[in-house]
Length: 522
Image (cartoon, rainbow, N blue to C red; front, side):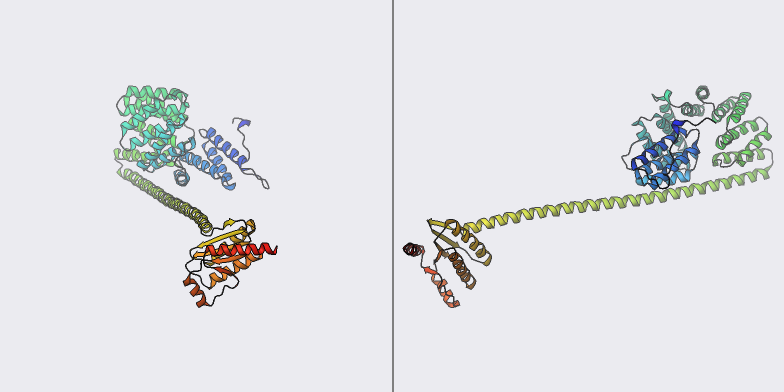
């Protein structure tokens, strides 16, 4: 085992008891854990998954919602790579409910790619294609050629499943034509060359197929590459060469890599049965059936070959038993796919409901905000209108009850219009200020323009007379018309405290007399 690289050592995933970490420190720690998972995923995928799960627990306990979403994006990708499609789908649906539609980064791109592959596994190719195309559009705008290359591989896979082989070939050709192709990881370049070889072989161009597969093997020595190369040799009739490569393939596959081993053994068994070494081929196929956690495709292939071989040998009972197992395997796989599709539909339905609820809440909030703004605008306009009205009323009041200085010491207050309590109150205050300011000795109240004088108005005039008297000023009331005089008599109102005159000239004369009398007393 290689010694640990000190630069890759990470702090504990969870804070120690009694300790707390700042949000920034937690975000940095989670980012370091996610980066480390990327470094080790190719060689230590289970460890990478465990590391991201620890990061997710840390983000959830802090809490750190943004970091938690990043962890779920990453975990979906890793779980899909590991073949844990159920959990990949569950996390993927949770992420879709939270993912901002305009988010564009490497984590999101890889997530969309992984979700698309997950849908492809359950034969929901149209849904898968939607997400992979989104990943494709995003990858081309990001400085991430690795994800772009994986997207081309997945597009090729899905197109081949929906009978759009030409589109799949175009995807692989685009991957090979990437400007960054030579900078890609050797294993990833080998993937692209392998698929190009398979496409060429499907088109009957074995010469090109050999060129591609040999280039791939020059980059990466792995069992599935030996196996594909051996299949091409088998198809061309080079049995010895094919057998030699199958043996190399079996020898190169790690004991724990059951998926690759199952694939190689199924293809090697096909060759052995074809060249008459049926016992050895049958042993390889039976070994595939005994492997743990092998994908449905390889188990189904092994059972189909066993059934065909037994039928060819005339052992129809054994062939029938293999077909029964194959049918049961198919039924189980269809049931699993059905359950996964139901799971996906349920998640999509819940996400759609949540999206609609959020949209409805957003619209209601927007409507409430607009209504509030409208009310505030109306309130502002009404307040401004009331202020303008008050200013106008004040102006009207001042204009309708102007206190005019005629000569030094003499003021005239012509009153026009109906007099109510509010107007009279304002009038008294204004008159007292003017009497004091002008040091008036006489005030003439001209009520020629007042249409009606009742008890309250008469009392108000008397109060005004008393008030100005306290300031050393005498009042003279002029302009009492006959109908008003008759009304005052009818109401029993007397104005004995006021000096009254018929009109303004008489009032001025009376004021002149009073002024002279006042001067005489002085």
